Length: 230
Image (cartoon, rainbow, N blue to C red; front, side):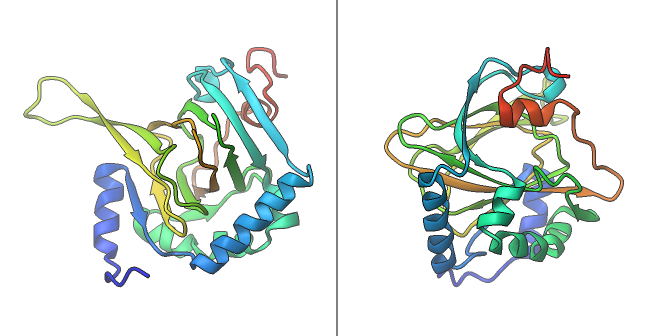
């Protein structure tokens, strides 16, 4: 267990100035292991789908058209098989509000409020995209030495003649929670090689902003080309 005192001001500053902050040891290791085992068992039973598509992204769905290869637990899948995550999702709301300095709310979109992405060994990945929700929180259930979250953070400073992009890689650590401005950062998951990576995606919004593109769910869950989606 990390005995470093929790520094709220540090996380607030990192979120606002670095666009992302990581809070360690939020979920106990034993609970991570329990959830991980149930995730794997649910996949083995064929109860969730494998997302496998590439080259379909457009500006309309905030996606650069990369490859998507992962098992996906949609909102109802989570409620059916991992109900503990619903409690975690709601219990994190005050902390998310403090870190982001916003009036955060849980998602009104039941299909995407809580998702789990399971990146299989040998190429599990997620293409470059911007999130559609105002606040993105990731809970890692595995610790990984590969397949980091890759971020392209926009930067500008009066001393620099031109804006630039800062590239950051963050590796998953079981029990850690990442809070980021996903709508402002182009990001993806580097493909896995020998490890499996399991990430819980917790989508939050704000009281005055619950926007989600009309065609996004069909694209991200079903691989429907946004150009032809109804």
